Image (cartoon, rainbow, N blue to C red):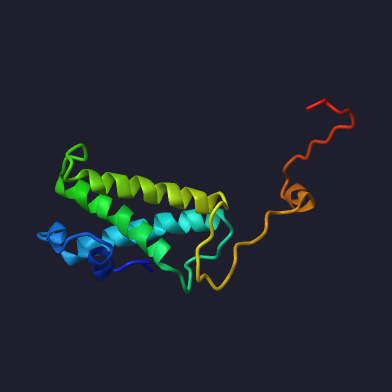
Length: 139
């Protein structure tokens, strides 16, 4: 389930001319791919996906990633001043998703908060090693 729609592309500052010539299934595929990337970041933070509710920050990130994929498909120059906005928004969205995955940000309006970090005992149950030391290292 995508976290953004074709209408969101226009509502988040991308002109309708950007989408001219792109078939609706192509646009939907880009939105779905961007939503799947967002799901990966969300799962990394402990959210259950797909989310039932979310805020405009997640929609905006998905729109920025999808717009990047659509523009790459069309062939554009990310170094030109006119097209640089797509690259900058894509990079900002990737950074935001990374911060969500690393639990430095949370998705607003989400009905279920991320799961807490596992306790050391829970990590050990999954087979990971826990290392402890008695001597102090003076750090």
